[in-house]
Figure 1 (cartoon, rainbow, N blue to C red):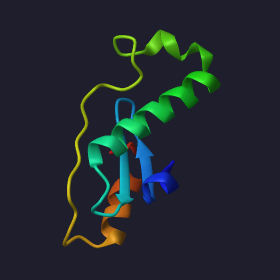
Figure 2 (figure 1 turned 180 degrees about the vertical axis):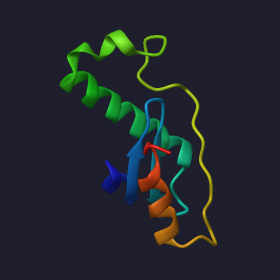
Figure 3 (figure 1 turned 90 degrees about the vertical axis):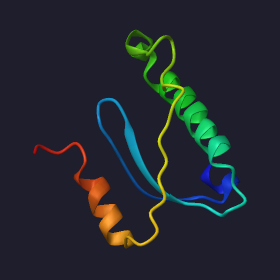
Figure 4 (figure 1 turned 60 degrees about the vertical axis):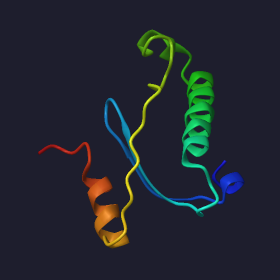
Length: 91
């Protein structure tokens, strides 16, 4: 799916209630369409692989309708990658 949007997934990590993605994408990509596609595809794949997942859904949906996206200009890729890798670790 990332190929369809010309997106590079640089880093990924998740917590119990959300995920962190570090992506590089061209300016022509509409972020809302990319996020909706990521949510839709991942939901279908997870429901297929983990058939019991329906018991833990949020109002019948795997993902909430909201998302947060932030721009990271100025921070190095190494710093951003390290931040995401540190998520969900014992503090």
